Length: 116
Length: 114
Image 1: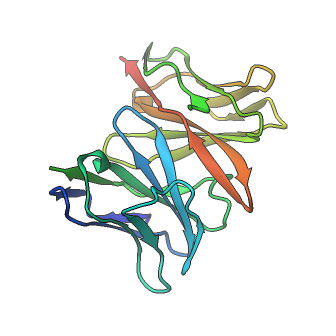
Image 2 (image 1 turned 90 degrees about the vertical axis):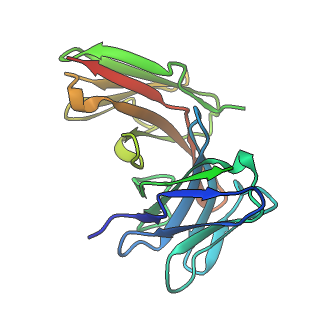
């Protein structure tokens, strides 16, 4: 049973380009969470999705950021027109129930985005 | 506004001794707390948790203590082993609507010296 898979592991984008981060949850998990970690800081919640639904996006910046979790395929975190401040590690986690803020959630290895 | 604080960025402990990692929180609505461990270039992995109705939870070498009146929790690792060297994150859970959101501390880097 493969764990949470994120790709790419490292992504370099020039300012103004788009970044697409992918997350395949563990088999049987239909709840996905995205977190961002800035240098020297803890993880910050961004968005919680179930299949085809955004449940909680209270941590998402209002502009340029979007997320989806389609019926088929991985969850995608999309950042349009990236700026240097978007440089961070982005982690995806999945859980079998909607209790990812209550019980153990399983994390991927993260995508390190560098904006140059 | 940091609701969960881990005031020690790093901690160095001799192998075999006790490691104590601390975490303070400000929001009295938090009712569930989790500790995660993170190695470099990997995602966090769950370690141990505690509900606010308890003051202690133990799992092998790991024990978490919760002091609700002080809004403080701590993770004890006894005895400390070289493989325990990692960054430890404290996270607190509060209900937001129909969802539970995790608020994370900035982490403490634990270094176990041989």
